[in-house]
Picture 1 (spheres, rainbow, N blue to C red):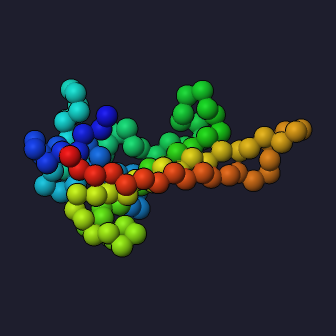
Picture 2: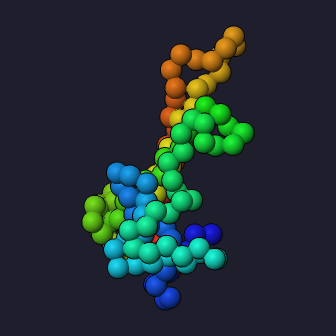
Picture 3: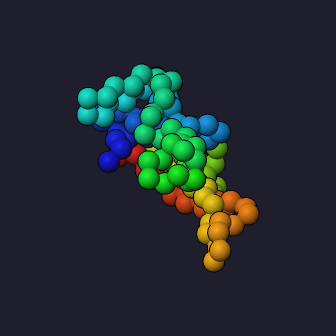
Length: 114
């Protein structure tokens, strides 16, 4: 589980609507033995290219997290909500080889602060 709590103030979910998420300004992240200061990269959400995911060559992943207080999420403006979107791109198989065009599947969900 990735902590995002108000008491104690711990933000390991981060924000990054246009790039991989980082710890928001004025916050910090403590996850086990890992401590990340404000502005620091959250490596568990780092973009992964088509050779970075062990055992899944040809797959890539991006994670984008939108702060719903800054950019309304489906009309909701709330500092205790974030929209998380995970996109996975892959080269699908056909009956004879791989398809010519890559496909991307995106899953989005709202996360609420505890």
